[in-house]
Image 1: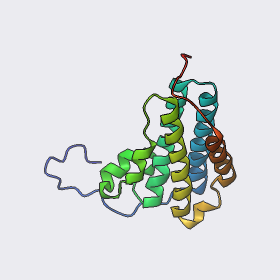
Image 2: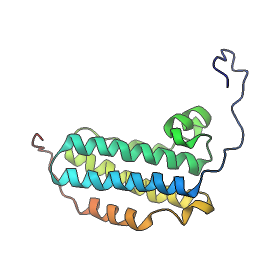
Image 3: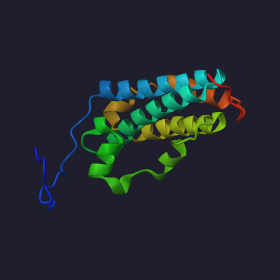
Amino acid sequence: MVLYDPHGAVCAAGPAPDVASSTVREWAFLACAALADVGKYLRRRSPWEAHARLGTARDELWKLVAVALGVRDPQFGLTSILDFAPELLPAAMQATVAELDLDAVTTAASAVAALLAQTARQLPSGTVSDFPAGMLAYVTADLAALTTTSDPRPS
């Protein structure tokens, strides 16, 4: 383990280890569960809670994106992508960031759901069958059915 490498002499490149399909399923499930909570909090008109759960869903999505890209240490999500393959950073992830506004969170959550579906198609073949596609379809439909206004009441 290299703790200090001021001249960049150590290369961390190498093949990414396989990630268990059960781990991929867990990360995908946690992302979907967080998106379901986003919908719940949006219906309650609680932007703070919805925004927090959106961040959780996005964190789990980053892990799955790292797996799909074949990046080392995908359990660290965005950090691993930035460390090992910053050139592969998906531009579409920008749409998953929202201000503290009900409409913005709804839009960003829908973007997370769409990227989850896209990432599922890019996962290694041994993990795709374990992806909770039914749950993602339910959450995607739930988010699409939401209508909000930009007038959040305090929660």
